Length: 461
Image (cartoon, rainbow, N blue to C red; front, side, top):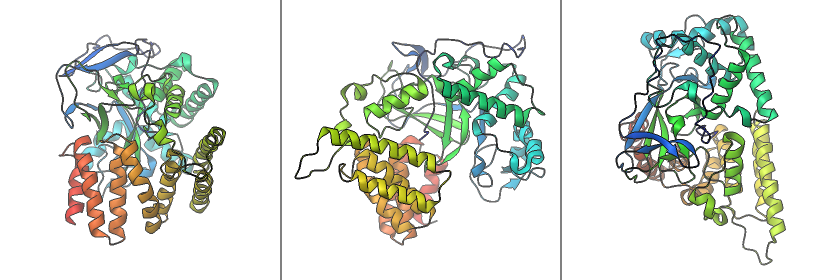
């Protein structure tokens, strides 16, 4: 999961992003607060959140509506642009014929944001291709232009006060920001007034550090959003809360028992990987190193990097060389995904799995990573037997290597259940669904649409 993207350290810095955009004298900056949640200075981390009462596993701590959001273009026609409801029979915009809505009410509510793109999509035709980040920033600018008071998304933290880490960015990220700004001007200049260049650089940096990828129950990317209050959550590789989505609202639920006064932590990254990989990811994207219990003890690393038991002992050099190969193979695959065919991508997976298997155990996370990718390709190709073959190899190690209430485990059980059902293995499929349901009721809440839909699948409705 790029899973949720949030920033952590140095949040006490306040950058005046919008000095180029006059604010109304009536703009209210008072913090409203959230019941049961307190903002405080977390030692060594900057701003953080803690609870003022105890919370049990599965309990909702708070929810936050998106300050601004965009639906992925790949989901158009399947999900409402306004409320992110997934349903059949959506009505399309009569002008651009690209945006889809539940009904007229959703279309009217979405028009202030959709109008930024509607005319442009018609004018550019097939050449309209801004990134999701550019689309999101355009909507943020449009909202800020008309905002006169603190929004329901900013009860604890205003968007203007989100950390940007401008001073920490390397040349590659600075160049990416400049490219985003060029895209913003190219696609939106006729329908949007921009703040000055420095303000745009800061805003894109804020989105980079604080943007959330909104995902469904199978962890498919639905879109990109900003939730200022949730950006206050600090990171831990041993999280006690999880962030999930209900339409365009983010919800924070407990996945451990939380005592009064305890800080609440989520995970910014995929927790499958060993300590060195996690810290490298955190430094690259969020500009800090983690000092949680798992990163300090590295207690799971030996299991995550398990090697084969062979008659001849495998040397440390062989292991290091294979780890280096695995990381390069993962990066090569990531870069190849937009360009190569499914058959070529599957071959890349199979070749790398074969090579890694000479040193690594099948439960090694680098082999699991490529098996998971191979499973996805098989599903895309409607090779359900192949999907099951890879999925069954991934499933058991996932339940050991991820936390108990993990979206990654739930989504795997869900995918496996649907594969089994497609192969007429009903009892096996229902068993997988029930395991997914047990996790989903905790992380999404028992009244969530995903939970309701899964119960219907189990009943065969």
